[in-house]
Each structure stands twice: as C-alpha cells, then as structure tokens.
Length: 295
Image (cartoon, rainbow, N blue to C red; front, side, top):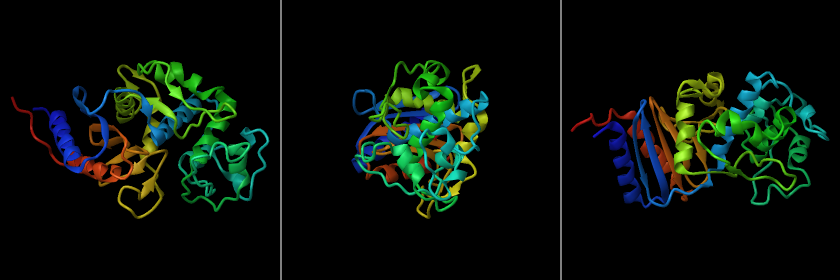
C-alpha cells in the first residue's frame, strides 16, 4: 500500500464515520503516487472560493508579462470609480489578500444588489490594511485586471486551462458580463486536482513553468492576521493558514485543496458545516509519517 492509498483510505473512513457529504477525493504524494475515490459521478460543480486562487494566478501571470503591478492602485483601473476614504491606496495585492479594509458583506444577491458591485465596493471607506474578507474584493480585482488583459477567462485559456486539460470551463458572470471571479468556476474533482498539483509544484506542469513560482509562494506566505480560530488564523493571496502545518484553498460547502509537505489532497463536497472538521482530519493525516509502502 502506498502512502497516497493509505491517506485515501483513512479519509474515506473518516467521511464514512462522520457522514460528511463528500463528492470526490484525490490524493497526490510526490511525483506519481496518486489515489482517489468518488462518492458521486465526477461532474463539474462550483468550486466556490477556490476560484480566488485561480484569480491570483491570473494576476501573477499578468504581472510576469509586465501588464500590471500587484502593488499599483486599482481604483484608476475601474472606469467610473469614485474612491471612498483611504481607497486610493488600495492595490491588487490588498484586494487579493483581503487586506483592503473595505467592508461589503456577502449576500446571495451580491451581484445584483447594486448597479455595479465594483463601483460600490470602491466607493466605501477603508479601515486601512487590515483583514476584511469580501467576495466583492476579488470581483473588483478581476474587473481591474480585465482592463489590462481583456477577458480574464479567455486570457487564462491558453496560459492555464488548456495546458491543464481543463477544456472550456464554465465561469459564471455578473449581469454586466464580468467574471464573478471569487466563485462560480465549475470543475470536476479530477480537474481541481490538476490545479492542486500545479500549485504544489510552484507553478510547474511537467516541463513547463505555467505560472511564476513567486505568485504561488505568495499564496501561503506573508500572512495577514485574520482571526484566532484554528485554520483561519492567517490569509495570504487566496490561501488560508492551517490547520496545523498545512495550508489550503477553501471553497464553500467543502471544496478543498489541502497542502502539506509533498502532498496535496483534493476534496469536492456539499457539506458546509462539516468541512472544517474534515480539513482538520486531512491536515493531521498529512502531518503524520503515514504507513510505509507494502506489498
């Protein structure tokens, strides 16, 4: 039994014991030790806030190509913006690390609550460079990015999606036709696991460096203090610090990429309340030595 198979079996056992509403599981250890399990057909589903990580990769690619700086103010890039107090200093990095200090709470109708969500977000006051989680923050970042790269989904197609074998992915749009950005990206478990491998390998895919290693490193470094709860103590560029020594991309209802050492565990699910407990289990398993390979 390989370590990936052992991890898979332990996670499947935990899911069975807890009743967690899992859809799919993929475990990758090292270069080619893989194991998976499906509770349901591997169909494309919304990966929710894991999409924020894809937005970070898009911004990193654009910066690498010299199309923008992550540290330039974003308000001038959004036509019609009238920045609120303190907003002139907000950069793409601040938006993607949720450190803009702008408060705009999520709602089920967030994309239609205002004529233009980005303009509403930028018009509100900032409390400074402090953590303030908001779906509108990533949406606004992608609005700004689009002024430099054109349609962000089309920009990513030859640079990211096609090389990863993610054909024509659905990425939901707001009523104005812009990418939701912070969610609404539909992927299968297998497709999400390829994204996990890419991130674990610092942007490298086979013999190609698809995205800059530095932008991947920034997904789990220079943490912004976000709270005291285990697993939510720090936030970087789309990445959450923890639990334990792990870090993760975490979407609503249990869409997970959990990274620890040379391993990444991919989970798709429909169980918002049970996701934190499963994440803790996965992190603990990744931190353990694991079972040595056997015949």
